[in-house]
Structure formats: structure tokens, C-alpha cells
View (tube, chains in turn green, cyan):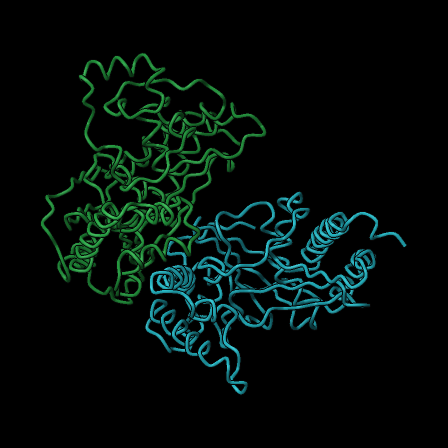
Length: 343
Length: 292
């Protein structure tokens, strides 16, 4: 793999950073529905920024420069290091926690079941505009896709009361989807569960993501794609970073950044919408580089470094982790509530 | 070859599709055919009595990427939203091209509705059979049907937005019948390929093939395979002049001009893959059944 020099990396940065970053922040989220929701997602053609044709190539070169040296330490027989939003979030919180969580994958939970079912129902609503029996439809959808997380059996095994509670919750989320989302015009070219894959460093690192909903076609003139993520849990700080990562992937894949990225929270019906500026893409790039360097180091056999954090109380490796135990003791065993349970 | 298609991509990919094809003569094609027969004939003869083997793109890819997997018993094909998204998507694309739908989503809806109708009428001997996935789809509930529609819509939309369709000379064929060529002498061994879009440009056929994931070292052989089979099965006029591979998930485009050298390369890869599979077929047979 050709390793570009540091000066080349600096030049990519200069090229990319040369323009004034368009700092954007998520605005407060009034409840939107129907045409108002549509307008918020797509805006007007005049609002869409011109695509910088050199941006995607610059970002890709920057990533290659940062990562190509790091993969040299990987064993020859090692497969590609796969970089997803979960991997980046996890490794940046605590390497030891990520490794422990991967080693002992927990079984399905009610929260995971709810999240998977709501994702399936959102997809159904956007695609066919009809949901008759939320629980039955969602379970059929999961089953026909092979149900890799074992949700169908898990839900089938719930006791009557738990199952009724889950059904009621799923019905509430479904109602939020129904009342907020109109039938999308054909011209918006809606794609659901669209997969994005970006190989780097000669394929030894693979960035990937699956977006819940993509609207609009990539254009060379003005940015026109809008990416939407659906969350059935509560707001979490990493949701914005997840969207920025998807914006980066879409930019690298299609050559043009998305126009807007959004998260739809099915519990309350809020839609957080954010334009995609250079700062968001650069922030995502820095997180990807930082996370990937750690993941590559772990893949090369390095010992995971523990980092005390608010999630230590849920870590499967807590019993053998002195920094984690100290952290839990300091916070009197009261880690951030529910943070791990949300999807 | 890999190309960096400038934004917007659809015009660039369309340009590549319509670019002049390299020269391929009838003599070139005859030589390729003879060479392939000389390689595959002995392999066909090794197949056990009554055994028939068809190399398709899936088996070619398996043999080139993971030859050890050829030894495992092939699992029975089970329809799923992923395995039928291409079939539904291509049918939807055909509807879009004929102006029968406003876009891929509406087209997919129409294709699926028609399949359910066809599946309901299969008891009528006078009615043409529906698509291979039709009866499976008709037996699904609303939630599962929605996944089928969603997968096919995403697949078809990615292809629909990849090209400037109105620039392609008619007729533009979405999918079309698979190409098939049997090794002469016994028909125990055959090749079968398919393309997702077929057009004619400057007197030569041009193919578009949509791939999943990321293109890799075996992808060139897969694209050439899509050109080799129709070239073997027909005259030089039927031989594709270019194959354009699209990998929407990766945003990757690969263009392979089809000339004598490219077909020779494809021939070698096909022979390697068939040899791997024939070895696997022989190894999988119970001990003692090959004697005599």
C-alpha cells in the first residue's frame, strides 16, 4: 500500500479546512408531521449547498494517510477491521468494555426487541404506507430476514404481561410513525436500510453503515440526499455522531455529502434535523480515525485499555477491572440510568 | 479497469456505457470457443455418469474466492427478500423503462401485485406461470411482504439513479433471459450468466451488472463471465463489447472492455472454477462409487 507522506496529509487538511466551516447545531425539535416534516427534511432547492467536487477525494485521501501506516501492524492472516458506528462509539468509550461486550454477547432484551420491531415497522410504513397489526407485522418482517438477534423467539417466550406491555409500547411507537410520516412522493426515491461500505487501506479497514432511510439521489450540482435514522429509545449524545458518521460514509461513497441528516424519535415523535457542514464531516473523520486506530491496535493483539466511564456499572468485565470498580465506587454505584438499554 | 466517474455520476457512467467497444472478430471468438472446449471437455468427461454441472456467476465467485466452500454440500435454495430483490427489482425497472410507473417504488408495488395474481391462478393450466418467487411471496403476511418490497425498491432505485436512461439507444432491456452455453458433446457441463441491463451501442451489446458489497479481485472475472457466455452462445454480433459493473453500496464502478485478451482471461478463470467444482463433485461422492 502506498503510504503518502505527512506533507500530503497536511495538504489534504489545508484543502479541506481552507473553507470556512459551516457550524451547525441541532435546533430544538418541535413535533412535525405531514407536509411540515417533509419540508424540514427536504427543504427547498435553494437551500441546498453546492457540492465541492474535491471534498470526497480529499476526505478519502486524508483517511488513507492516517490509516495506511496503522494497518501495517496487523497480522497477515487478519481479516479486515470492520468499523461501524457501534464499534467507534464503543472503542472510544472504553476498549476493555468493548472487548468484554463482544466476548459475551448478551441475549435479546425487551429494549432490543422494541428497537428491532420499530425499525421494521418504520420501514414497512415508508414502503407500503400501511400497518395493520404492529406486533404481527414486525415479527413477520424479522422472521423473513432470518432474525439474527433471535427477537421472534424472545418475544414468543415472554410472559403474558411482559408481552402485552411490549405490544402496547410498540403500538404507541407505531402511532407516532403513522401520525408524523406522510406517504413520500415517488420523486424522492426513498431507500430503506441502504447499506454503505467504504474500504480503506487496501481493504484492510472497512467502514460500513446501514441507514434507515435515504431520500433523494446524489447530485453533482447541489447536495440533495437526506439521511434519516430512527430511534425508539431516548436521546443519546452519540446519536449526532452516528449521523455525522453516516454523512461521512455517504460523502465517501457517492462523492457528494448529504444535504441534511435527521433522527426521528418514535417514542415522542420528535425529528432532529441538521444540515451537513464541513465541520460535521471533519468531526466524523477525526472520530473514525481515532476509533479505527484503537480497533486496529486491538485487532493486532494489543491488550485493551480500560477507561473509567459512566457505563462501567454495566460492563461485563467490571469484576476484574480496578479502574472500573473505583469509578463505580466513586459514583456510589449510580451509573447513568438506562444508557445501555436504549437502542 | 476502475474509473473515477466525475459527479454527477449518472452521466459519467452512461458515457462509459456508450463508449466505443474494442474490436472482436469472428476468428477471435472461434479461437476462444475452441480453447474453452479444449479446457472444459476433459473436465466434463470427469463428471460422474448422469451428473450435470452448470457454472453460474455465484459458483464462479465461490470457486475463485473461497474454493474450500465448493467442498461443502450446497444448501437448498430458499427464497428470501435478499435472494429475490434482484428479480423483483429488474422487473420493476422494466416497468419504469416502459413508462408504466412513476418510479421504482410504484413499479415494485405493481410487480408484486401481479405476482400475487399470477400465484392465485397457477391452478389454471392455461395461464402462464408467474415468477419463480411468486408463490413464496403470495404466502407471506403483510410484514414479510413489506420487507420484500423494501429490499426490491432499494435495489431498483439504486440502479434507476445510476444511469441516464433517456440517453441509451432503444431497445433497453432490464434483465432479459439468462445466457446459456453448453460444452459440446454430452451437455453435462454448461455455463449460465445474466446481466441486469442490456443495451446496444455502436453495433455491440453492452451489459450492466449490479454487484453487492465491494468489488474485489474476482469481480473482473465475474463481469467478463457475463460477456463470455453470450459471446460463446451467439455470433460475434451478439458478443458484448463492454460490461459495466456497479456496486451501489460502495459507490464503485468498474468497466471492462471485451476484446480477445479479456475473453482469453475469462476462459482461464472459468476453467479454473470448473476444475475446482468438478474436483469437489468427485470428492463429495461416496467412496468407491468412482471405480470402473
